[in-house]
Image (tube, rainbow, N blue to C red; front, side, top):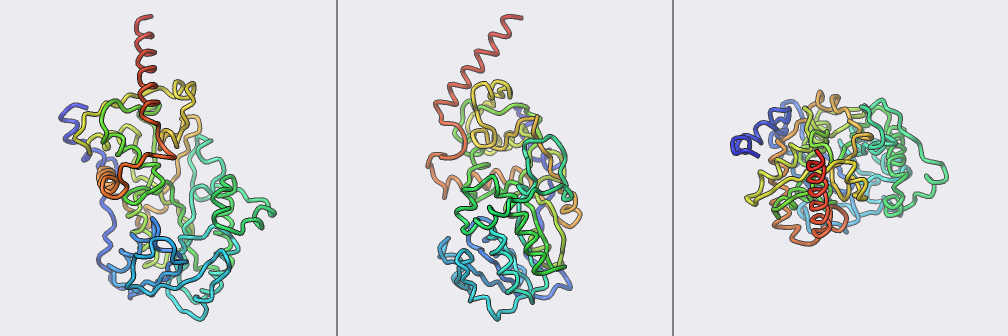
Length: 378
C-alpha cells in the first residue's frame, strides 16, 4: 500500500459510510430512568450493554446462572436461576420496564421467561441473521421480510438444553426464529427483535474476526481470500450494544437486521485496516477463489469473513440505520480488537479459525508458483 494511501486509509473507510458510534453517556431528553432486566449480561455482548445502560442512568438487574464471568458487576443486583432447567423463581413477582434477552435459544425457555415479565413495556430479543435459511449460499439481498424456515416439531421439542442447540447448527437459525415468535406470542406489541450478523470487537473469543488483526500483526506474507472487492459485513459489539439501548429507550418494536454498514465495505478495506494497525511489514497475497477451493481452504472459518462470490448474501440493515444504528470506523474496531488480543487473549493458537502457519506458507508459495507459471506461458 503506497505511503499516501496508508496515511489516509482509515479516513477513506469512514467516508464510505461508517459513521461515529452512538453516544451512550447521556440519556436522551424525555426518557426517564428505566429499570432494565438483562437475561444473561456477563458474556460478550452483555457487558457493553450493561455499561452503556448504567452510563445513561438506568438501573440494571442481571438474571443468569452465575457461571460466566461471575466477577463482573458485583455491585449490581444479580438474580440467580437457570432457563435450561426451568428455574425462573427469581423472576416471579418482579417488575421491570425493559427486558433484554441475550440468552434465548430454546422457544419454550423464551416463552416461559416472557410470560413472567408481562409487565414490561419493552422486551428485546437478540436473534441472528442465521434465521434466514441458506444465508451464505445464495447471492441475493436479504431484508426483514425474507422467509425464515421452520424447524421440525420433533427437533423443537428435543431442544431442551442450550449446549445441545449449539451443537445442532442446522437448526440453530430456525430455533431462533421460533424464539422470536414465542416472545411476540407472550408479549404482543411489546417485542423488538434484533437480528445481528457477525458480532466482532474486543472480547470476541470466537476468533472469526480477531484472526485478521492478529495475523497481520505477526507480519509477513498473509494469504488473503478470493476477490479483494468482495462485500463483507459485521457489527462492532459496542455499536450493537449502543443500538440495543437506543431501541430500549425509544420503546422500539418490530424486527431489524443489525449488521454493517451504512456504506459498502470490501475485504480489501478490512484487511487494509488490519495492515495499518500494526508496525510490522505485511504483504497481502490474494489467492483466487478457485485456487482456495482446489486446495480445500474452507470459507468463513479457515478464511474468516470470506464467503465465495456465488453464495455471498448481502443483508439489508437500512431499517436499523433509519432507526438510529451507527457504526464506528472499522480502523477503531481493528485497533481495539488487536489491543484486546495482545493484552487479554494472549498468544494462544487459533483453534477454530485461520490457517496454521506452515499450511499458510505452503499455500502462499504454491499460489506464487502458479502465478509465475501462468506469466511464463504468456
